[in-house]
Image (cartoon, rainbow, N blue to C red; front, side, top):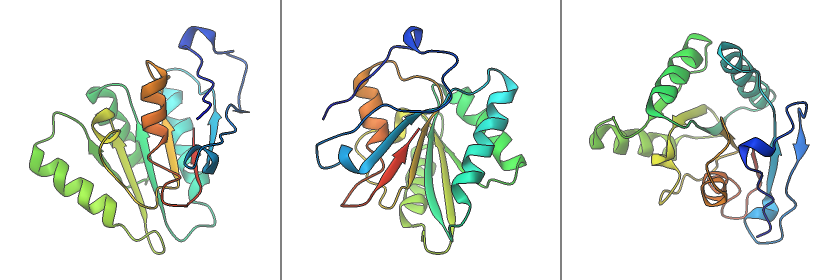
Length: 166
């Protein structure tokens, strides 16, 4: 897989949308990876909500995972998105194992033909889990390294399906 990863200091602040990968391996070739520069502060959550609402347009259902860098950021984003009418579940290390298992199972079993499922998570959801039918992965903030970027993006475009990662 050929991933062109840029460290946070190397990103052009004026860039709003750019294809950064044209993969050749089985998963990467089905994942359209894009970079979107969002405003800083409170405006970033509004922009995130707009991206998620746009993704839902014209779809009967979808599965989306939004990755955030910290538990506090995941909780804040989850509450904000819920207030904007985007029902979701937060998934992070401060949730009990029972809650994480139940939430993961509900997300995994969501029927994308009829409903929209949104998981707002930290890296707890990035490795070792298979969520079939994920159509979009959003990485809010730049991952610390290439491996983290690849594992997060790999939640979509699985089992012969196409996906998108932002």
